[in-house]
Image (tube, rainbow, N blue to C red; front, side, top):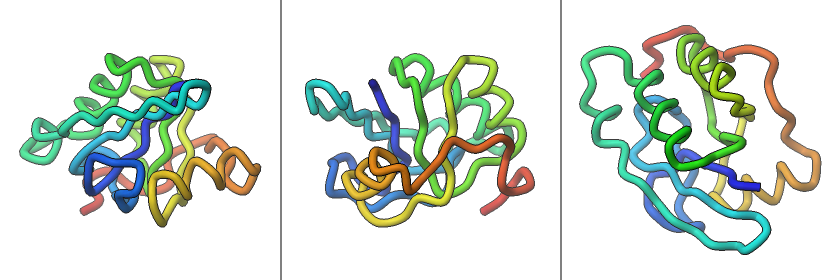
Length: 120
């Protein structure tokens, strides 16, 4: 499975960025091969509006099947859902720790956004 995690840096040891749409980077981890890659989210960070939807497009193009983040707003959640990407919120710690918590069943996919739009 390919999991995209919002991150403050570009490695598996980077801290989880609590924001989805304005996360600094997306770290993609293939849980089968353990291959790690990262993509900058400059477009979302600098967007005056629509950061979450743009970020959803980015992780979709990365091939993510699941997103792990701290928080996700309603427009981003709907865009991810429409792309067939599950969303897990409430993550903290490093990218590796967040994936380990998900794998252990401590973090579950969300049924809805957990914050209003334009959360900073």
